[in-house]
Every structure is written in structure tokens, then in C-alpha cells.
Length: 310
Image (tube, rainbow, N blue to C red; front, side, top):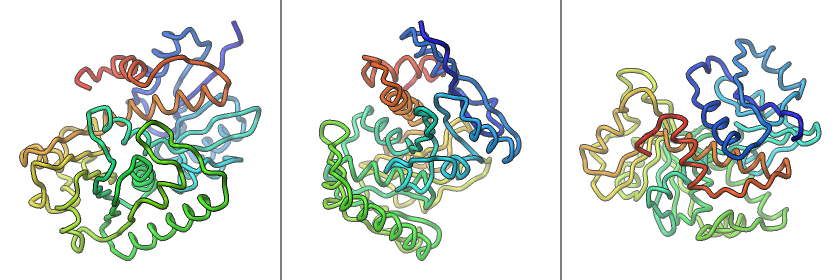
């Protein structure tokens, strides 16, 4: 058996995180000499020193250190470049590779529930890295149209323009990356296929009402009394609604969506699917053949996290 390798979640505060339980359950199940722990560091200086030491196989990064992780990386995968933020760092022989698994987690979980993005219209609320990662994953999953919606139309326009420019350069400059899974599109095919739009909550009411899938990638709902990001009177029973927030009670958006008859989900399933994506990335970089499918890994991690209903 090889020497133990350490993996962490980096952030502050993170004592509530279910990540160690999820990952360690899989490592134990597969007999891997890996141990996942907390790197709860209260200052940016401590976080930067931790990353600089590179004494880890991989790190999941959460608030407030995602920008520091992005800057610390030597190589940035397309997922991190396009999201303009990283939440996973993998150490390959001293070289830090950055990824963003938000999009894979969100789309992967929704597909597990039966949602198919091919040919669909998707509205993504928010203009940060999580929203961009989800927008990109929806495009690769075959969505016909993705609308980025924020509080300010001009900000949404600028963020989407920067994403589209970066996507174009990567699509033109690199060998086309194959579809990550069956029924998805290759990297270049997704760029050529998807129609990207933007707007504000005030100007995009028609797009929100027409969307097949609505994804809220804003932090609204993390505090009591937070409203939904848009007028929930626009919702109808044919829609699927997803909110990345979990663990803070039912958000205003999820409550309204359920009242309207929508299929509505909080972010717990995304958390687990992100962990599956991270595990597979680390195994690939480390040259480990895990020989486990998505559903098996998801079930082990969901059980360890106490998410019985997923």
C-alpha cells in the first residue's frame, strides 16, 4: 500500500461541510490510501501559504478563497477559465491544475433526476463563476438556448460577452474536446450550437416564463427572509427549477416553484454530484482506476452526507 495522501476542503468557516464524510466514505469503500480533512483557515495569508506549500493531492475550495485558488494555479482547465473561477485544485507532481466543477455538479444531478437539456431553453440566474460554470455545462449538455439573467442588464451583458469571447478562443485554438458523456456535445460543437442571451430580471420576464429549466446560481436564500431573484408569478408547472442553495431551509424560489407545480430541487444533489466529478478528476490526474460509475459513487456519498432523499 502506498503512502497516505492528503486531500482537503479549504475555506472559512467550513465546520458544517459534509465533504470530508462524503469523500472519506468513497476512499474507504475503494481501499484508497487517501484522507480528506478540513483546512479551515481564517485569513487570506494563511490560505495562500497553505496553497503555496502544495502539501496535498487535491483541494476543494469554497468561500472566501476561490479567487486565491484561481491565482495559485499553474494550469487552468477550460472549466476554470470559462467560469473565471476555480473550486478544485489538483497537485500533479508539484503543478497545480485548476478546475471548476459547479456546472458538472448541477447538470449531472439534474440529469440524474431525469432532466434532459438537449433542445431545451435554460435560464441561469446570477453572473458569478458558479452561474458561468452552469451556463457552460448546460450548453455542453445540448441546450438550444441559455439566458444569463442578473440584477443589472449591462453587467450580465459584459459577463456573457467575456465568457463567449473566451469560449471562442478556446474552441478555435485547441483540438476539439470530445463530449464528456453520451448525449452531450463536444467542446466546439456546443459553442457552435448554443444560442447565448442575457438580460435583467426586469427585462427578461418573457425568457424566464418560456424557459424549460430555471437555475438560480445566486446566494439568495442563504439568509432568512431572502426573496426569490425574480417574480415567481412567471413560473408554470411545466418547468424545472433548481436552486444551488441548500441547508438553509426551503428558499423562497423553491417554495414558490413547488406551489406552482414545478419540479423543484435545492442544491444538496449538486453538492454530491460535484464531489463525484472531483473524485473522478483526481483519479484521472493521479492515474488511479476507480472502476466506479456515477450512480454508485453518488449513492455512497449521498448516504455518507445524510441526504437520504436524493
